[in-house]
Image (cartoon, rainbow, N blue to C red):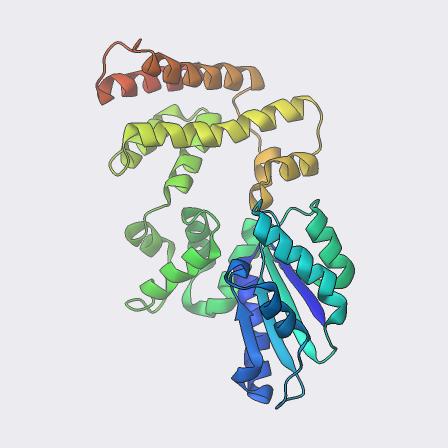
Length: 314
């Protein structure tokens, strides 16, 4: 029996695998369980033996194989093709789960595996999906607003959210918004995200205030590079919306997943204003690399950034 566990929620996949493993070991002992975490650590002889040989001491075997469907590594691709080719030889009493995270659904391997395996997708499509998982897991230990804020702070990474909650519950009986604000620092990505949101809503004063806080822990060049990387996403959204691409098409092209709402979000900054601002920021990088800034200190670079942000205040 061949299964394919996949898509974007590592947490949900691991929880499901953990439940299957516990149930299997309870009935069939742990020596009939095998987890191959890296294909490259094994050869074809080991794989064919693991996949097709039955257990002498139990009715069933359970094998989990973590796979990377998007890698360009030739050996990894060869081993994947070997597994696909021999999938027909897996006896019914052997339970084999191929586990892949966020694969490209257009890839040849993805399509071939799903012709042979029973597909089980584990998705968190939106922020509310992650919040619901957290609220169900922790019941009354964290309130709705605190869960929502923590998910944002940890950039929709559910494993980081759970880690922070577990640490807080050592000293707190329940978690509120104030506890999150006082105890948890947002990820740099989330801080940048909130900063960009203020820019796009023309809340320049608030944006500059947030930037000051970010720069307490991050140097201005790291901030600038991260900012450009995130703004590039907004740039493509503006351009593709102008060309009438659908929300789904843009989401898929940019691999936004649970950030799909960026496509439909209403901003006070127009497409033309944003484009001029974005191109101005890129020019700062060119000026710095060609030694055309007014000075060479961080303060000079920061001054150029301030000038760019003020373009959006008009």
